[in-house]
Length: 115
View 1 (cartoon, one colour):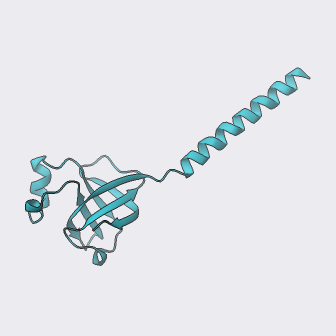
View 2 (cartoon, rainbow, N blue to C red):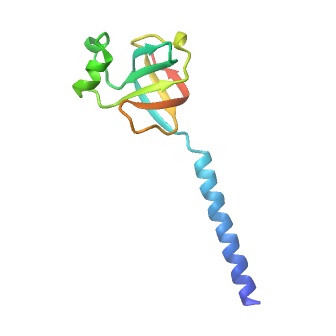
View 3 (spheres, rainbow, N blue to C red):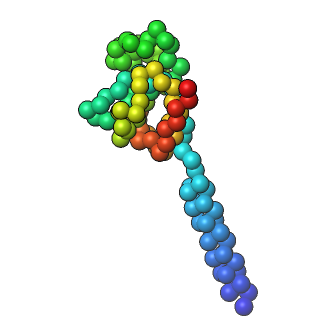
């Protein structure tokens, strides 16, 4: 009898832990990135977003800016409608996961314009 109770308690505890893990994973919003749209790549349906981009650098070649190392927080946001965005717009990107390249490649769950 005692063995059955212990097994039942272990099973309930295990089930509870699995449910907790699933709930926290499902409720995770993702990561937020705030920055300025620097480049719109209409052919590949993506935008380059740079955090804390200085106004004087808005028209610089993006490759030059990346190579300079001045902007370490830079992402390509793919699968966007390029017609919805303009260079210089401040946006907040909500995404889940990114690759290890620089700039990182992400697919946005949500994009909000800030200004």
